[in-house]
Amino acid sequence: MSALSYPVQTTALILVDVLNDFLADDGKLSGAIGPMVARLELKENLARLLAGARKAGVKVFFSPHGMDEHSFDDIKHLHPRFQWAVENRVFWIGEKGDEFYEPLKPVAGEFIVSHHRMFSSFHGTDLQEQLSAQGIENVVLAGLTSQTCIEGTGRHALEAGYHVTFLSDAVADFTEQAHQSALTISYPTFGHETLTVDEFLKAVE
Image (cartoon, rainbow, N blue to C red; front, side, top):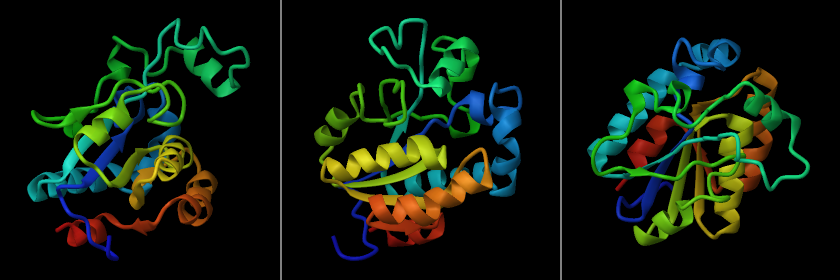
């Protein structure tokens, strides 16, 4: 693929964890991440990204986090972050927090990936199968959070052979330090491009 060129036939926009527990006012994590979401104008940028991608005909995939009481039955050494999530029923399947945030929810013809339980949207899900079925070569990532699920999904995509693009103004994290670490260290390491929303939309063929 030539620099800054994204054919709609082979490009997938993957929106990770655009869920109520992060983005709704009453979400279980919105109080903690809300200040960064607001400062970075994440909701507005994601809405502009989604509208532009739809208008251009880019294939849009939604990758939701999700867990229940049996999600980690096979994990002997569960990370404390996930243990806390289980204890507090964060992204709990069947509850409001695990539903897509209304202004950013999928529409007919878009793709919904099976729930991921940890950071990578590939691990234990059908994302690879769905991307392959659509002939995708270029993966473009946005959503939450910058240093965890976005980074983890991008790293997996790179190792799976995709061209990986991170959108710097369409991600957010709980702290400025975590967000900047992703933008300045992780994304240049695991991605081919780090673009703004407008730069990406301009480069869509």
